[in-house]
Image (cartoon, helix red, strand yellow):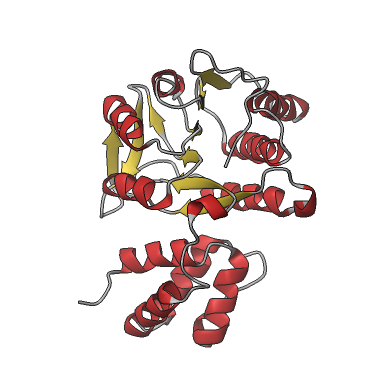
Length: 278
């Protein structure tokens, strides 16, 4: 049975994790598609072009070959860097957010000055995440950090998507239970979405630290907070210090949303000493 478009998109995101990998893959195997890429084009648009102009059967075959090759297969988690699983959700009926730009800014910050990093962090983005995929992604990736970017609701829910791109809300109780079962190496959860403070308070029953938002937060403020926070963590700053540096960055900008992010932590965790660990 041929792979569906959604399945092809998921494999592209999993196997071609950097923009350079995506550009190289398309250029070598599907030049008609890559010829339509332009400088500054975001990853989502490039993926859509590849899906539109590449033969689905040929694309599925090349992705399977990449998956089976030692170079393309995911490396054992313990041998790799700290893994940041970035979940982007923007259902079609909600306000459209600049999520690909946020992910790119985080990736750019993590790439800059890489030889000096104390804790190398690898961002693993997943786009248009369906509620039904969350369990599989946690099992498959076993992240150290789980980051959600999208919409939250006033009833402590996260708004994922269904197969048609419509809203599929995830209730707080279900999320907390799932994290409790599948936390494994998970040390930090970041919910970069509006009104997620109640959720992070519940999540620290299971994980050391969690970051959420007291109220609505703008696209630019969310991206500024995330890129600064993860950059500081990658240089070995404790989670508490990285959080404060990200808030300072918001205070230094015209955005002035430094009071929106909140950090919660499990009882007994010293956030001034606690760092991300492999």
